Image (cartoon, rainbow, N blue to C red; front, side, top):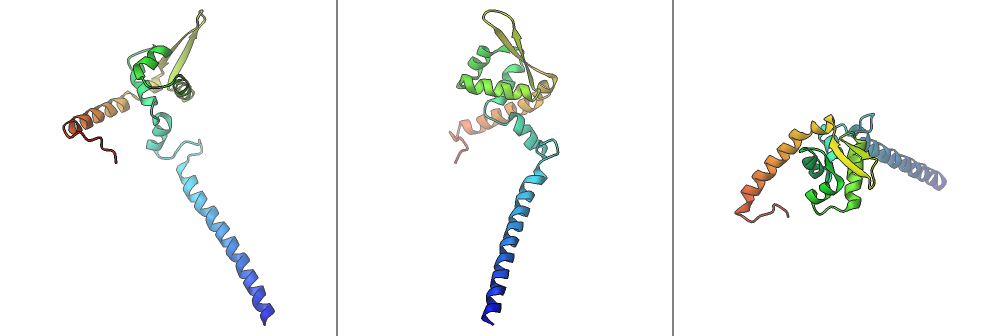
Amino acid sequence: MADDRSVIERDWSARLEVSHALQEKARAERTEAPYLLPSGLPACPVATTLSLIGNRWSPLILRELLSGTKRFGELKRAIGGVSQKVLTSNLRDLESAGILVREVFPEVPPRVEYSLTDLGLSLEPVIDVMWTWGSAYQRSHASEGKSGRR
């Protein structure tokens, strides 16, 4: 009888381990799979937009390029506070997403200019809404001296 009990306990323990493993696998699939399209982009359109322009510097780069073509130094000065390395990385990311184009002129020293593609120009309403919302927030909190942060 004692041997039967130990066999049952071992069997139960093994089944429990398998059950936990299957539950963990299902949990991982639920949290990952429904959020991605076959293209690898997030299924949510807002998440897709944020994946492309949702970092600290990309909207500011777009803001500057909406007024026209700019050189690297002009962008760096206009944005302020961004390192050369970070600006370069963000420009490369936006270029690879098809939002801007980088044109290199064969001169000495080399001249590089950045401008928005049609896809990048299509983000103008997004930047405009961010500008409008940010301005309203600044006005509503200017007299209170609140930042809205916790």
